[in-house]
Image (tube, rainbow, N blue to C red; front, side, top):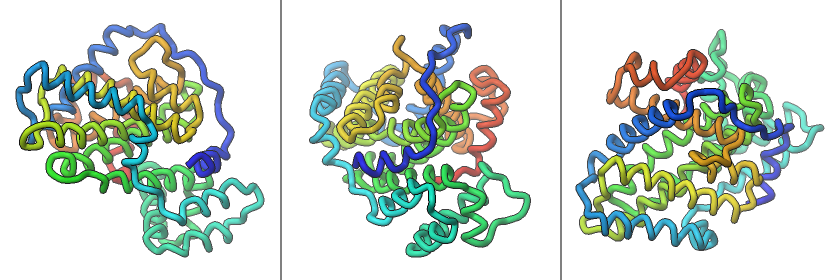
Length: 320
């Protein structure tokens, strides 16, 4: 795991910097709570119920306990496809040519389709449709291809759920994770954070939530999960700790691990800030796409500035 993560980190990284504290932190925190609450209620609408405090605490304890045993937790995650490490080795080589990359990608026609689809996405907005692999690789560049490969490498997580609510929720959680990764990477330059590091953190932060849903389904009768917003906020927090624990076990870069684990804490860095803002933008995008809120909802206007609203627009047609 460490080697392919290292290969993905071939691009230069911006140094971590403290998050700007001049903004009204209390107002930002309140808006984040509202967005998280709306997202959790939507996510658990099919299986949420009014659980007792004891049940809620038991489920949270299960996640906390697993976070202390990252080897066991990471054992629940599927392995990455064999083609991905080879491509990442190619990307780490400064002398690799466009033709070499094309020949490597051509080995998997599904990957070819992914690359062309990515090049035609709202993120890149080509003036004309990109139809060839060479054109798509030129549009993405090495960093864009690296982000795409990271997303593909993590995608098998969607299929790790056993059944019931966890299986139904997994694609929705992963959809939000992909959008979070993209939004975080868009926010990163303005905050002095590394683009690819922000992308990795966005992909990784929901891993603990997927595992938590599996644990909850096994521990509750009928595979249900507590549906209160307050429980959702606590579940998001402990599941991020689980994600950070697994990321550390996999030897992710320390700044990525720290960013995931420091969301909502005084230890936040620029990378944490990019992840937090990307997460909120992605949740709003999911809620808009699900028609839970309108794209001109006051929550969108209050929670996002003008640049963040442009990021929200870019996520409309982002890969999922």
